[in-house]
Picture (cartoon, rainbow, N blue to C red):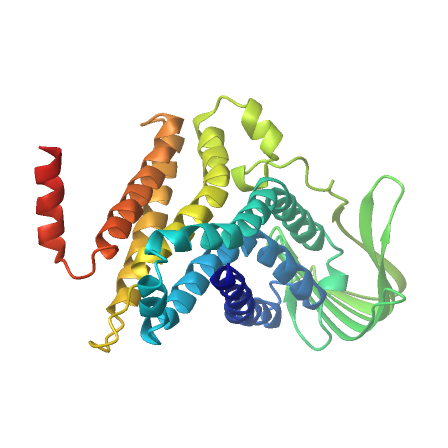
Length: 367
């Protein structure tokens, strides 16, 4: 039909705009957070873009679900506000006839949500952890920014370099202060670099410098010049192993696991595409707008329904992970929201009837 094509086209254009706006807001917020951590030295500068990308992949299913819900609300609210819905209703197109084109629009996005939540999301979580772990295990000298005092991970050594060459891995005008068993040792060197021995030990090789050790004014105070001085900075640690947290576990492992936490995570992932379809259906009656009133209270009720739905799913997932309820209980929030959508759909098909009268008539017909 004509309205099927026009509705699908308008939904598509609106969804693209909504998705871009939501993604820009979330990415800018995360980018500001990571840039602040990078300025403090907690995250490497070159890692910001990669971590933002992994974070966006993990949040992609939720963004798509919210895009489908908001796009449907915006488009159908405009149809009601511009009196187009009154024209279609007078032409014999009931509100239920809008369900199929809405679901046809939401179904491909729900399939994409399923693919991302079941496969791409766990991979992104694991890669993000691996990348962050690799950066943590970098050589301490390469993590130093020129002109900034940097404390080692063991909090017993402080570094300062005036210039650093990332390509050659060498630094110049180096200051190192080491505190071991209460003894303070200060080393000043013109140049230095980090090397890894065959046994995996990492050493800081300093050249052409001077070393001060001990407490100034005491008898055991040492002062010496050197041409080459080696400082051990630990062993090369192995990279992160297999995924251990639930969000990073592959779906196949969750399916074969009998742990309550793994069952809860699997139920959550399977709920994502189903919630996308249910929210798209729920948006049809929630988009009702009375042009005479001029108030957009329907958007407030729609947001309230969305938050109740997501919080209900989160609460159910937590209870499943605590082994308080069976895994099939995850279907209860979906059933409640689907039932609410059917109830509102039947009520909006009779807009002249008050909600209390509609409920009373429904109860009498069942009795």
